[in-house]
Length: 348
Image (cartoon, rainbow, N blue to C red; front, side):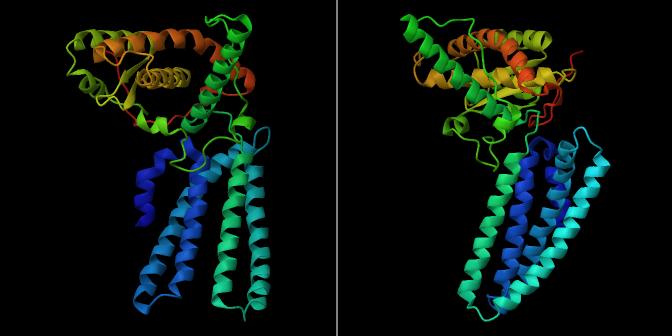
């Protein structure tokens, strides 16, 4: 039952976060084994429930690991045969499993007279070593397509580098104007793999939690976000123009704590990547608004208009450079898989 429920909830989310879900699988396996170990130390009435919870955790591990291993094997099979990789993967598990049984038997015999506290300390140390090894392993896998975590990491680093470059140029030129022709720099997949978040909830920068990006919202959600505006007709007209022109809509949420992105059902992965790029720039400017760049005393919708216009200008300037530099750095924008609620808009 636990595997069926877990699969129903998460099946569509595995590909967009392969590395994090693979770590979840390993953590669930460790938690399951820990419950089984702890079950021998608790009163008898708790033994069966803890064993059941442990088995549920290990069953969830099997689902998540099985779903993610295919994508990982496909990554390693570049320029090779996927069937060859799968065969070697199975052989590796057989060998390591056999060696593990031998060493486990020898290890168990050697610590048969050790105190319970010492045994638990050894178990905790080995568990932490297992988690550490898995984190290091995931950092070696450099997927060449964007998901939400990698996209955030790339854009954070890109905009930070661009801002630093502009500051240096302005100091040298003793001029407060920003060079509108400055180029952007995109790190390669192998570099980003060392920095991308590997645990859920680890999307750094606390500000990001204040304004989240929700991809794939419904058009009703967009309408609901502007129904209290006095000039909602202006916003509705601009949103319709945007989705017809760009293939997506970027809007501020009803509570101003989220950025909404609605996608045209005919938009390809490159357009979807651009929509997130636009939403990221829009969110950055909303955060700048709270720090004083945009007047806090001005009418709310007037401020949102200004932010929207400035964000569109910034996207028009930066997106061609981002697209070019991403391809040059080894990213494949045709395989982008960003987390999404799943709604799409059909234009009649």
